[in-house]
Length: 292
Image (cartoon, rainbow, N blue to C red; front, side, top):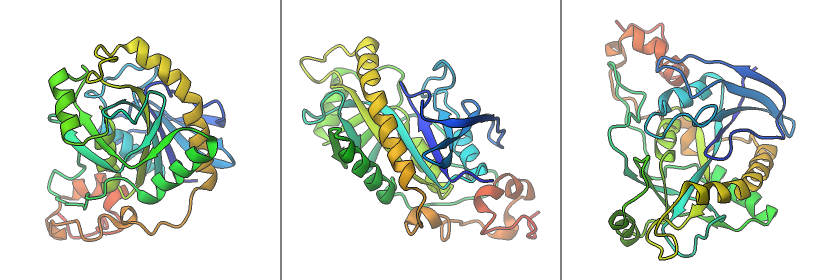
């Protein structure tokens, strides 16, 4: 049976206590291995696939993550919705530590990360002007409001390379751009989820004010972990409430992102590439095509 709902847990959210009927599922993808086994479990009566983004024991840094394998593995399991959680720094006074943000835009400050499934003889250009699922983000934000958490709807997430935190000059630059929060992981997940026609949204857990703030000029892991621990229970409750309301009919651009995005002539796509990408492109380019 396919699992329609995926959960990606970031720093501080390596598991969910409410998950029952658990089984581990190891998946191998054409892009290598995901961060670890997926935990297939029941949450609020729904089957979900949970993945710890950084692996067991938090052993993978943001630049080492195999983003393609993580998202492709979700697709192989049948996932149509992904709710993720991640730690972020605040670039604006109004986003205080332990607040939650549901961003709707990204700025890419990463270097050399592979952010597409389309290579090896096939090209696609998906629309990405609105990079996160509005419907899913609205649902998650509504659940946050009902929980009493201090949540902010919308905002721009700067995705930096890391693993070091920003310099003071960089932090000031991002503020001058009007950016709201800064993290190291969500952009690649969002790009790949869009290519896989999966609705994706994130719960950004504010841990600190980044180094621009006079009271936070030295961001420490200790500070971040303390705030993450406080946020973890809230995030789990929000995710559980969102899962309770999922799935529903998808009418967003995410569900059909590849409909007009595939550029390569079908008979020019290598047969091996068609087989590898079948979970994503199979509805548009069957493997029994005349590809060579």
